[in-house]
Image (tube, rainbow, N blue to C red; front, top):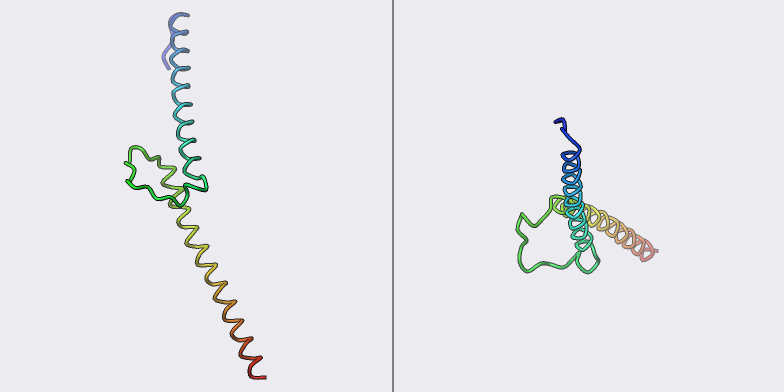
Length: 100
């Protein structure tokens, strides 16, 4: 850290830091708004007509999208297994009542 020579330089440094803080807060806010819009119920299954450029997409959105696809696949497989088991059980029950 550099030593600040006088009060005026200290005031200038504080203003620069405050400006930097405001810029970063604005970026966080815009990223958060984009993230919340992408997870609205109407937008989850909407397909975009043109792919977004890599510069406009945030890595968090990419990670969340990959995670949600993975979870969707796992939940679908689990639901399919449950439905398959119920169908098998129903068929066996039907066959056993038919044989009686």
